[in-house]
Image (tube, rainbow, N blue to C red; front, side, top):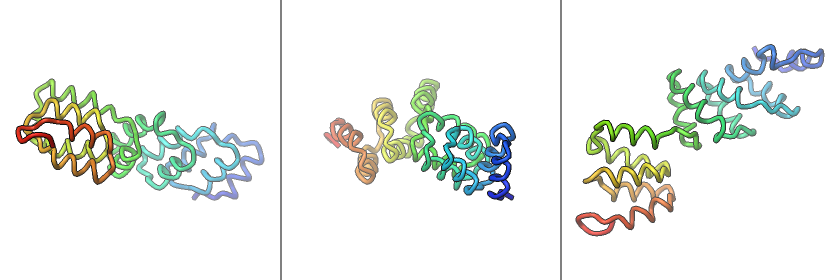
Length: 179
């Protein structure tokens, strides 16, 4: 049940918490007291714990570990993959919102090359990319998706202060002139 006193006792008597998966279990089951003790005492192998919590769908632990030293740029893509295949939508959303590399540029380009109709749902995709600050996707959709509503995308970019996207969208020529 995650008793910190037991963990302290075990560590004090030479038990390797890494070797015995104690920390992985603590991260999966959200025992933040144990994780906090580990981090405060110099624990530094947080990426595996982060991935484990993501896979299990423990959003509270995912947030805690991100706040305490996990680098989303190195662990985020794998954590996102694990959360996705495990069906943990809330964790997936949180990871994406916090910068996990989702390889989306490659996915979008591939789908379009294979005939995906940007017009069907393209405005939703463009708005989402604008909101999330994904400049490469915004640019790709605008350049490859005729008839998209750039005004809504601009509103999203302005709402979320996505300045690079705002600047880009304002330069785009439309049949009615600039956005």
